[in-house]
Image 1 (cartoon, each protein chain N blue to C red):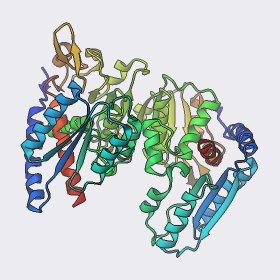
Image 2: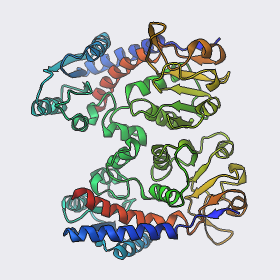
Image 3: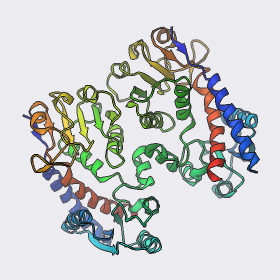
Image 4: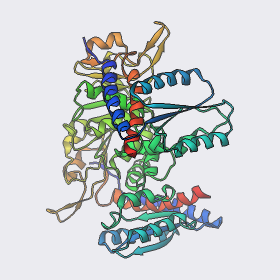
Amino acid sequence: MAEILKGAPVTEALTKRSIEEVEELKAKGIDPCLAILRVGERPDDIAYEKGAVKKAEAVGVTVRKVILPGDVSQEDFDKTLTGLNEDKTVHGILMFRPLPKQLDNEKARQMLDPAKDIDGMTDGSLAGVFTNTETGFPPCTAQAAMEILKFYNIPIKGAKACVIGRSLVIGRPVAMMLMHENATVVNCHTRTVDPASIARNADILICAAGKLRSVGPEFTNPNQVIIDVGINWDEEAGKIAGDCDFANVEPVVKAITPVPGGVGGVTSTILVSHVIKAAQREH
Amino acid sequence: MAEILKGAPVTEALTKRSIEEVEELKAKGIDPCLAILRVGERPDDIAYEKGAVKKAEAVGVTVRKVILPGDVSQEDFDKTLTGLNEDKTVHGILMFRPLPKQLDNEKARQMLDPAKDIDGMTDGSLAGVFTNTETGFPPCTAQAAMEILKFYNIPIKGAKACVIGRSLVIGRPVAMMLMHENATVVNCHTRTVDPASIARNADILICAAGKLRSVGPEFTNPNQVIIDVGINWDEEAGKIAGDCDFANVEPVVKAITPVPGGVGGVTSTILVSHVIKAAQREH
């Protein structure tokens, strides 16, 4: 039976720290502010927004919602984003993507000021992750995986880590972040031949393929710690589930994050902590 | 006995292509131009400069040398670099570093226009390597290693690759470039426990630790292809040598690059090809 690495205690610890940091900032007269830039009324965006607003308010971060009509012109969108970039009272910007198709997604991504890019989408943030410097912010999900490892005192330095998946929101950045902490990392992907034979050598396995039940016991070893980043809909069970075949993997590894209740809940807490960090960096 | 993967035929093929591309550009009235920005008279810089100038002239790329006194002020340096960034007749800028200590190295790196950053030192270029987009250019040595693999038809897709060394000029970027070509890559470094046991599983081994004779036969297997990026001074032998213990490694692997005569010579050819690419992108 594996240790179950729940996200809730991690969120709780991070939230506590965030509350203290916001108090320190407010004592200096700084009011950390998250701007949410949403175009249209997509249910996914609104659901994520609600969670982020709740987390922000819980730690004392001000939220400013900027909601543009779904058919906004490029010119008006650009003006709004530039305004938020230049507004010194705004410390972090959560920009929902993909944007509606009349808008240039790539242009918007590049326009966003890396200093306010709290979800690690700009080239500035990604270069920061690659070079291990404090430019922008890492993608929240990648940092959430790292925070869980740290909270539960999983040794990273000198460990062998395997990351399955190479997306820019989780796979590639978390591989880099693990290496910066002195793990030796192999990054598997869809073209990897026999990933199970590689994964089963790992002390730390990050599952970020986004594919239901793609990681079975043949990927594991009894000393392995698994961080399951997958959030998939399990049609059969009628509920969400991770990338791991949890029922068969959990009994044979050392520790594993559940889905739901693992990485997912930590992510929006990280987002809010980035707003605070952005405010700290500026002052 | 391993196949010896010499750099000269790779350089020759790349040079031939560069000559054709320069002719095409000139037919359109575009004169690809490399600006060399050097501060002071460091022998290392001058030696590299001579090689680059020769390569550039051999393919018809114009060279403009901008040499500043060793005690140049930050203001004058900034003005010069900004001038080169803005000069539309300059396509690529080779900026020698480290700069003398009165100048801000980091500021200079960030000031350089990524579009003219032919040696992959800016955050723009490094983000391009990380995200696999055509922003800036990859570091020349990393691309030289890739070009050698491609020239000799070494299969990369689906291969297991091991990179030893995680510097920003070679280790990290070449690991990314191999992954973008669908290899499965593990990046070893000074904190890796038992790197030999990891390296010996690799089909492709990139030696980029910069440590004389740090890679012996225990890192290899008979089907392995080694790209030795190390350039070290072998005191005992009185000549330069790679990271591999060549005498003992060469007999037991499938293929290996020599040092000298391997990656080194390809690097400046790549530099010049980046000037041409910069000119092509712009037009």
